[in-house]
Length: 183
Image (tube, rainbow, N blue to C red; front, top):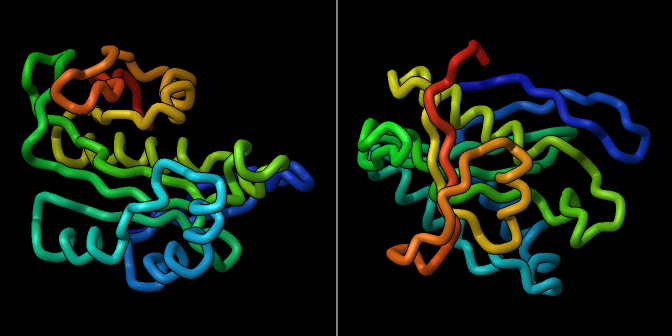
């Protein structure tokens, strides 16, 4: 699987090509060797995420998929989705793609780097989750629980905010409903 996407390189505001691909060992290596130290320094919520374990889990369980967004020779974002067990709140239990993890490289985060390197990493991965939902026959439905620091991002993506979910550590639950137009 490969999907070409566009990112904005913030240094010069030029569009550059990115590629969403299946999660592979080199993406896990980039997380461990290029991202992790920066995430620890700023106490990011995702500093404890073990992408080597996640990739192994994905390989052993057919209902899980992993993706990476690459640009200019480096991993810019990572996502793990579940495709068979979660139901929609908006559509009363109809299946959806559930995003378990979505993260962008530390240099793409304004709270870590004053001028982020690229813009559009998270939104492109989120858009790809909708594409997968359509491909699976779920009509573009996507759900996720947001870490506290990402709530505004998902609000800005026009996802429906269902508020804090007591069953999931009071994380805010978001959902995209049925897609009404082609992506």
